[in-house]
Amino acid sequence: MITFIGDFECRADAKGRIVLPSAFKKVDGQDNLCFVARKHLFENCLELYPYNHWEELLEQLRKKLNPYNRKHDQLMRSFFKSAAELPLDGNGRFLVPRRLMEQIGAERDVVLVGIDKKIELWAQETYNSMGDNTEILASLAENILGKDETENF
Image: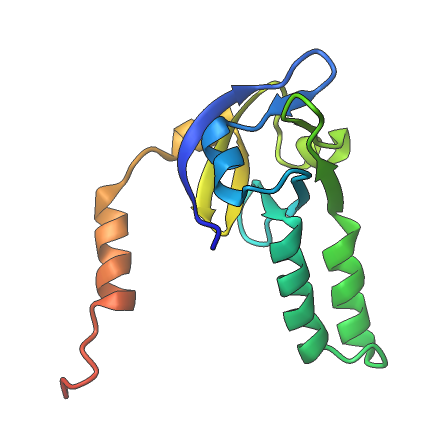
């Protein structure tokens, strides 16, 4: 099972390639690791899915969407429009298309953040500006996870 953990500051080389941190390479254990990147739906970052997890997401979408429904078709088009395959080269680097980097305002300095089965790619400045707000995390955890279903209020 894949679980990406941690955040890593990275710098794209002159050609725009980013080295995948070794901690993330070890997680999957595949020889021909390939990611699919797409713009995050809610945040100003990219989501990088290992290809096998991407296939699982697509299977979930296929079960819920009808290709003969215009709204469903539009959702699929928009979902795929901002996606790109990112194979790792022999040196463990991947190249994110410029159009995707521009969508999140990233230049050379980025942060890769492990979030369970995916990696988020942030412009370093954007990521650092968020800071670590433990109060927000505590409040979210309490509101989402802290409810006891046996309590009657």
